[in-house]
Image 1 (spheres, rainbow, N blue to C red):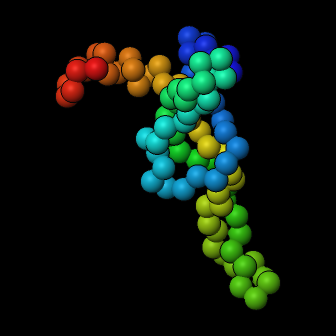
Image 2: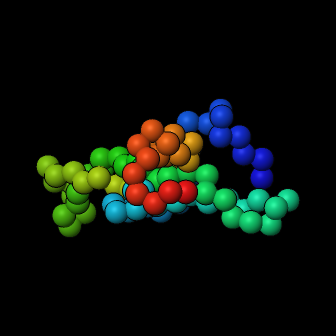
Length: 91
């Protein structure tokens, strides 16, 4: 997989995401190196407002329905912040 961090700010993934997944890694397998590489960090998920139904009839309530689209940011953003704020274990 060719992955150039320089030109990518964020990407959208097809998958099921839930609250609490934010901050989790997005990894890709590099075929030529035969290794996993962290390429992003999950930021959240996209939702849409949907109607609530009671006995088949819509009521005046709505809920946030998970669209299955995961929002992730390039790992470059995290590594830049780590370099600016070098606290903790030296990498």
